[in-house]
Length: 326
Length: 281
Image (cartoon, rainbow over all chains, first blue to last red; front, side):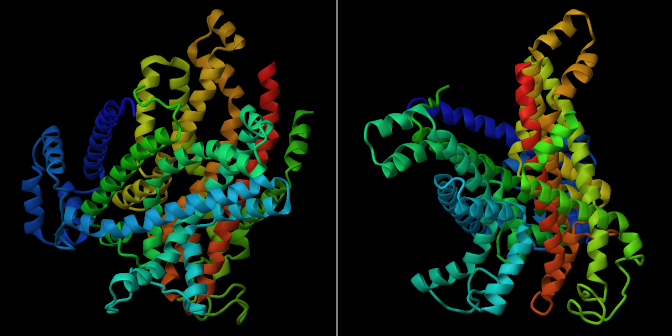
């Protein structure tokens, strides 16, 4: 693929610049917040311990001029030191690393669900444009788009866990279940189903509508008429020509939005007690543990940047017209 | 008459009409909440854990005996107020930055677009949570936090509009006759770029309502305001015993956001043909 090394280098530099900006924003937030920055960083639990507060003051040089403080803060982050959570008695970095896998599992599953089901529904609606099924899918998409995901999560939990007892309500896997291998995977899958479905619902609606609009647009283009004139069957035309071109913009938008799923995961993980970064964020809010919150802010921005770069790479693979070197 | 044409075009979209009706109900509810439910929604007016239609309470009571229907009526004021204000603030920020970028171009455009890109890379909801948590929840901090994550799309829209209109004859004429930049921006370009901004704004109010409710659900809402999101969040731990406490406030959010989206689409249908016609003028 032409221009790949230069592309990656360029994006990496851009990523570092953006991350630096985010670190500066973190720093500004700590200092702009009401109260003593040391107390803000200590969090509610840490603020009660004067030794810890003093330690923070030393570590971050909080009585030195502002620019010097910023330099100290940036150098801390660059060496992987995102602070210490007094409440959890762990470094923020360790906390984030521990909770990251669960969130990745949840968001990636939700993402795949949203993209696949969204594209399928959007295609169905477009192929039967104007029919009852088209209207039904459009209405369904609109409802999925407008509904608060934490509420839908609660209602689904009520129906499938409490009333019907088909699926577990909380957690990552059955506590004390002692399962392993395939049985454990099934167990995790059962716990994952409702949260992932709920988290992906909003974006499923977005991608369904986009796919529908995109297909209707592509359908009238010249290359489709050419394919039909060549004698290709309707099905082959739809899949090989229309669909492949129509889903390109959908995949681009989806990739860019993938990182934002972590925002929704704060709500979903709270509802379903899923042990990921989102739940950690909720706990940090309750405990006024601002270093953890800022750490989550930082790492979720990293995730968005990574997904953006991945999207560009995948897009260039799918569409040979794109030259990365530009 | 232009406004008659507008309403006729709007009414052609049945969903948009339904949306407008639902919104009318919500607005009336919010406006007249203090008359229909004069007591504060925080007052304990009945026995706790009453289900809908039990002992004279329409939608039931919550864990402390507060009336759910009263909470929903008063919550309408909160949601609409915050939704509208944060959208207004986002509009001011976004249109200003976008107009400057689109009108002046060059390095102004480059700098502002990098700035916009930065805010579009940051995950929206995470930033709102961080902002409201750090600056402590209040109507002001919530409105600002929502506005801060919402302005980028408006800026891009305004920039596109200004770039497109900048090269049009009537703007060129205004420049030739020596009108100041400010006059050109406010009197010539801005009025002609309103349609897409109006459509985006109504959709943005919907997003703002969802954002505010999500913040309140997490406990980051205005502590003095009985908000729908707060009601859902407060009932989360008792959902097994009392489904109605979460159900009705959530339903209110769904209907309001749905209505705003339908209105946005209706506005799009009604205003766009006019934009197309204007493009040929």
